[in-house]
Length: 222
Length: 398
Image 1: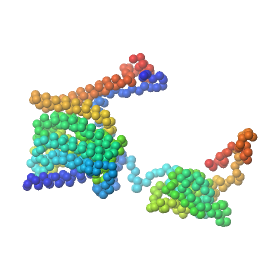
Image 2: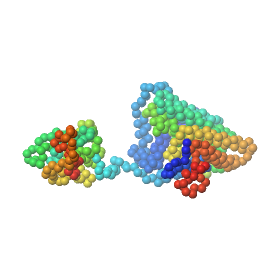
Image 3: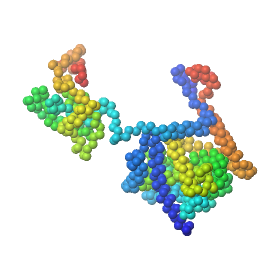
Image 4: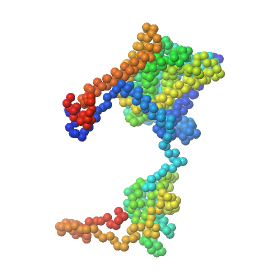
């Protein structure tokens, strides 16, 4: 066995020699006692007294959801099911209904919108998926209920969360007012990406857009 | 006043007071631990958390008694009882105040069983029975963690009994008695310079260390270390039975602290305020408080040590007992015997103890060094390290 390192960049660290005082343990114990005593005498607790002192949450904290209202106090959601599709926990159930004729800016609106707060993993995917910025996660973290049914948040409850949090500086309405969202601004569908050569023998050559590399679409869309 | 009645009153007071004191010691431990770790500690129940022990006690009383189906029921139930019983029994011969002092009212007696001539032997005998509680509890639980904890506890207690007993033997030789009251009285009568710590400093250190191990306190709490054994021997215990185990452990702590103060620190003697001949109003109360504050000091030291020293590895634990403390206490005892036999002054024991300590430090340092040299991977240190980065390539020349 070789104890000498072959590589130049390996530094061989030796165990320090144990002297007289080290082997009696006394200085180390005294030093340790000094440290602990210092903390007892000079107390600077870092504990946050929770119910009295609320924690300072980061701005991107993901808490209870809310359904935003638009400028006419209607629910902003257009029942596109994007959030329900994106949800990894399958906690969103939406029932859509055709929008009344006096709402020309949308086809549908949610007849019922139920979000199971117990099932949710608070990943924020629904917020990211929403094309009209209707669903947003707030800073509310102390969510309680007396039964499971209590925590099935329906449309009215979620709108209630919006009413409670819209004026909180930590939960600004991240919506571009007046416009439903970036998707509402599309005049035409984005162009397809560049194509590559596809040999005729290939199965995919029969497709309508043979060889087209999918683009990510418009800026801001995932 | 019949002697029996006084004894009964004393027993009632002690048995009544100890659980309460233990409860508050737990609060103290939690508070001190919290402060050492920059936390606040219990502060919800009552002012500064002062009613926390009551809440805890109530909770433990009202909690459901869970007895797992796979345990040996009889032993499982007996074990916590043994723990508490032996711990309380050991306290019977510990004088917890100025015993036999003239200023004490005749109805108060600060010891349950006075004038036991083999007090120290009794304490060690009963104290080592306490391990039965641990061993039986661990064994009856029929659980691997509990069994391991019990095994460790028995090995540990057997090892540390020896230095514990031998470190006190020196004092017994010096005082010529095993009676705790007599030992205390001699120190009190002699003043501060008669405190045994001056003649037996090494024994005091070893006694305190070994009794930490006896009480399963950190850094010797291998029997119940949470990180390795879940809860050790009390893994399967809950509610009141668990509380009884803890009552036993804290009673043990109290006994140790009183013993250390009585054996080595002159009992209730304190220069200036509590001398043998101080007879002012309420002198006995002051003397009682002196002894209690000495014991309290040791309890605080134990709690502080808990958060200062990391837990020993089991082989280190055994090495400390068998390679350090037993030879040292034996040498210390021999020294006292020589001193007593040749009638030399007791004061020779102070430098003697320090020299023993130093000698052991040097011996164990060189032992460690030799051990290290014998290891296959040892590379001798260069005498002159001129260029640190090149020292490795040079060492191959040796």
